View 1 (cartoon, rainbow, N blue to C red):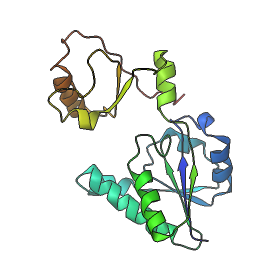
View 2: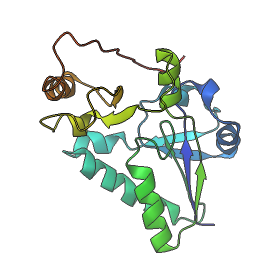
View 3: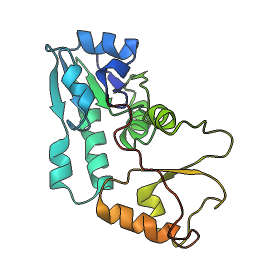
Length: 196
């Protein structure tokens, strides 16, 4: 039956897959992943054929164009008699542009959608930092923050800035933060949380 299953792969360690995700993956002949650059894939059952959308990242000039192309392909695959399992890093609704749009569009087109939640990257980051995010943590996306003149969160509030994936993005974020913080303001860098 035509359907789309969107599955969260967790933050990186196969040990952090949910039981539900493992059961779905154990029975799947194939899955489609947003990117093959995710350590959880190494721990999948050998019987699962993995297809990735990495070619779109290489071919298209911007993330919005990549995400739109992925959405279109997943919707097309979901219309097949066997449907599609689309797996994303972390949780389908945490820092993930494609999953919410696939759900919205699939519902418009009458394609059933099943969500399999995954542990997001946030929990391992909080563990690595030894902090409880409540009550005041601001969650910020580096790509958005780097385009601002000043941060859009209170300067006395702790902030978790995600997706600093290259030097250019780090530089843009630093320029924005320097509008309100001195150069020697302490920061902590967390890399690859949840991958071990």
